[in-house]
Structures are given as structure tokens and as C-alpha cells.
Image 1: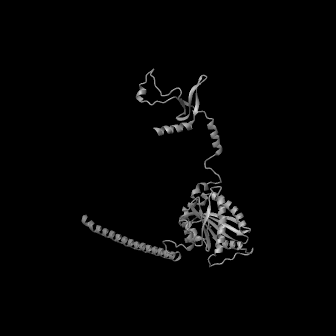
Image 2: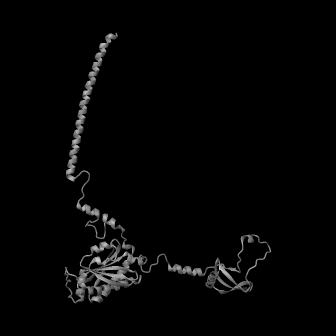
Image 3: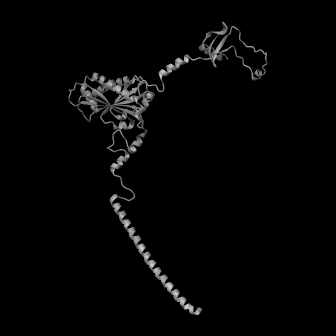
Amino acid sequence: MADEDEPVDEEAMLAEWEAMAEEGEADAENSGDDEQMAAEWEAMADSDASEEEDEDGPSSGRVLDQDEIDSLLGFDGDADAGEMTGIHALINSALVSYERLPMLDIIFDRMVRMMSTSLRNFTSDNIEVSLDNITSVRFGDYLNSIPLPAMLGVFRAEEWDNYGLMTIDSSLIYSIVDVLLGGRRGTAAMRIEGRPYTTIEQTLVERMISVVLKDMCGAFEPLSPVNFTFDRLETNPRFATIARPPNAAVLIKLRVDMEDRGGRLEVLFPYATLEPVRELLLQRFMGEKFGRDTIWETHLATELWRADVDLSAIMDEVSMSLGDVMNFEVGQTILFNKTPKDEVVLKCGDVPMVSGAIGRSGQHVAVMVRHTADRLAIEDENMAGVS
């Protein structure tokens, strides 16, 4: 039976091998189709990437235009002049804001009113002075931003032992010279470029600076008396350096108008100059006292004088060892070095108050005061010096 079955098995095995071979060829054909499809998809992706590169640049990132770069650095021209953004704001974030010294607003408002009157008397003309703003700047940046030609007056605050800077632009210089030398009203001041200022022009500007400094002394007087004295006049900002370039300073911008003429006057104080009066400039109004109430202080002082205190009359004091004190017995006598004529000290706690002679008033023991606490303190000092 086995010999008859073997040919049948071989035929069945050959049939199975043929079927397996046909399945392998089909799988190979299918795998070839999959590889072809993957290659087509990869080609399509490469074509899309090339199109994106042609439109927006490299696929790794988009290139910023000039406006976006300026905005990032903080040099955007559309932003307000008083606001800084971007990296520029980050660099200047170390500056101390002038708003931390609120008393400066009050002082220079007072100075503006005084200058309006004094400059009218100085020029015999109708002059209006206005305060534009008060800002914080770096000293080096301010010197680089001064529009030339200009005159820079260096003045000294004697009580503060430091310097300040006053800048007068060319428009105000020519307007003051024109007014003081009898120029006709209603005509704009002439501005001659390309020549240095004459001695007459410098002398007239020095006189105006002296008037302004006097008014500034009067403006600071209610807060802290200070004398501002004129030191020198410079036309080159490099020669008017009174602080290091990175140092912070307070810049006060004033506008002087004389009908259709005028210009700008700027006063600059380095923070080092204002440091002696910094505590006073932190006040929000003149005469402010931090944490103090005079009404409460007066009431407290009045009630303290009415307070009841206990006094102890000290007849005499003897120093003894602890062993002697522990060996005290009933009936033992302790000797003191006082006589009936010696004075008795009255103490409030450990503080000696008065001393006097002991006596009797009716049924009570009394002390006639002879010396006060001040006299007792002097005597204690003398005894300490002798010992």
C-alpha cells in the first residue's frame, strides 16, 4: 500500500511547490508596485519643497525684512518718542525713572513761573516759559544728541559739591541776542551757520544763564537751600563732560517763547548731583514727613506727662556675696554707711529720678527734693571717673 501511495504524494508535493512559487511571484510584483509608489510620493514631496523655497526662501526659516529688524531692535519710527521697545528698551531698562523723584515736578513748575517774570524783566519783552517734560537719560547719549551749534553752560551746586549742565540751542541764542540788542519785533531771528559764537553773544548768554540759575536757586530753596554758581561756557559737548557716559541723569526740557521767536533750554542733573537731597525729592508734596503725625505726637506727649509712675526710695545699697545672703538669720543686723543727714535717691525702676533729705510730714515719711536727674547723672559720671 505504501508503494502505491508514494507517486501520489510526490504529485501533491509538486503541486504545492508550484502554488508557493506562484504566490512568491505575486508578492514580488506587489512589492515592486509599493516601491514604485513610495518613489512617486518622495518625488512629489521634493517638488513641493522646491516650490516653497522659490517663494519664501530657504525652508529652514523666513528672512526678516528691514521693518521687522528695526522693530526687534527698538528703532521703529512709528513708536512714540517717549516709549522704547525691543532690545533698545532692554538695554536702557537700568535707567532710574524720574517719577521716583516726584518733587522735581513741583520744583520746576515753580521755576517756570519765576523764569517767566525774571526773563521779562531781563529782556523787557513778553516771554512765556513752559515745561515740556522731565525724562531720564544716559549722560553720554544726551551729549551725542545735542544739536549743534549750541552753548553748554556748566554750573556748580556748592552745597551738593557737584555739577549740572544747561544747554541753550541756537534758536534761543539768536533770539536773546536779537532782543537784547534792539532787534525789531515780528521778525524771526536770523540764524547764521558755519561760524563760532562771538564774544558779545557769549556774554549775553552768560547773563541769561545767571538769571536762570538764580531762579533755580529760588525754586529749590523751600526744599533744600542750594547755591548754583556759573562755572564755564562751552560750545563743544566733549568739553562739558561732568559725568561718565553710562551714568544716569535727569533731563528737564524748557521752552522759551518770545512772540514769534524763541527756542529750547535744557537743564541736566546727574543723579550723583541730586543724591544729597534724594530723600527730600522722594516726597510727594512740600514738607511731607514720612510716617510722622504731629497731632498724634503732641497727644502722646501730653498723656505721658499725666502718667502715674511708682518711685522707690533707696536708703543705701550694700554689695554682699550670695553665701552671706543665704546665711542670714532672724535678728541679724546689717550695717549701712548712711547717716540720717544723708540724701535718699528716688528711682523709677532702675533710673534715678531725684534725691533729697528724708523726713516726716504728718503720718507719712517724706523726701525733700534737692537734686534732679541731671545732677545725679553728672555725679555718677564724676564718681565713675574717680574710680
